[in-house]
Amino acid sequence: MGYYLVDGIYLEWATFVKNIPLGQSEKNILYSKKQEGARKDVERAFGILQARFAILRYAANYWHHSTLANIMYACIILYNMIVEDERGNYSGAHDYNYDYERHPVASVHHENGPIDGFANLLERNNSFRDRATHRRLKRDLIQHIWDKSQQDRHNN
Image 1 (cartoon, rainbow, N blue to C red):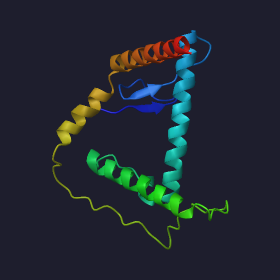
Image 2 (cartoon, one colour):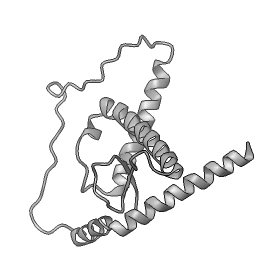
Image 3 (cartoon, rainbow, N blue to C red):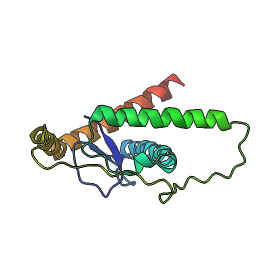
Image 4 (cartoon, one colour):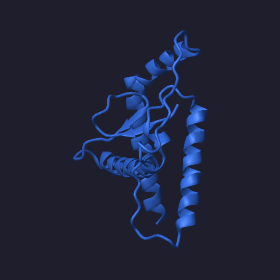
């Protein structure tokens, strides 16, 4: 199971790691700063990839995990190759807007009938919505970040 860094508008699901409003304990403030910084880094990085690769702009809810991982790895590798190739030629003006009219994206073919593994998908989705797991995860993350910061402070 993976976790998603989210802001305060999301529900308390087991897979969401939400921020905490500022103005609470020192532990919570440190956690909020770390979580917000990580979330912004991921948003920026994914935004750059979405701007360059149209396949990342569409919902992928029912794709297999390994397929999604391969797509992401391929896009990251290609992006790094592009950056390496353009190094030294950078003029600062790139247009990352995809031209949908000249390069339409093929639609996905859907078949009617039972979907293999759909019951398992529904069961997994229900486990994601567990609020107790969400609260336990957040409490453990706050404590882990706090312990690490105290250890770093002690070592310096």
